[in-house]
Length: 68
Image (cartoon, rainbow, N blue to C red; front, side):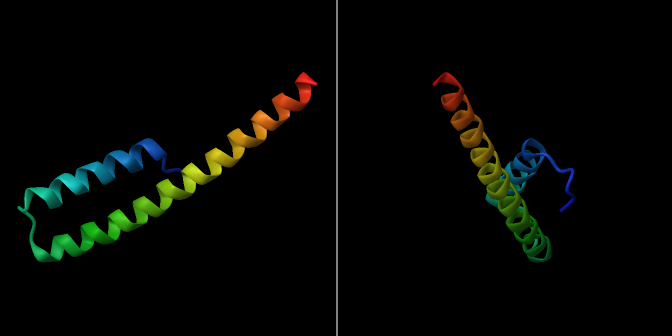
């Protein structure tokens, strides 16, 4: 996965993969590739969310301290 991937692009790609799998019009070779790609996208999105949550929490802590 490229470092420059965005959460939004990754999420949209993941949605498309899910649609393809749910349509049941996918051959077994493509299915394996799509599931592997989905795993990478899920991992990327989860990590991005964790990092963002941590950053926002730190920002909020800084704001709370500056109010004192």
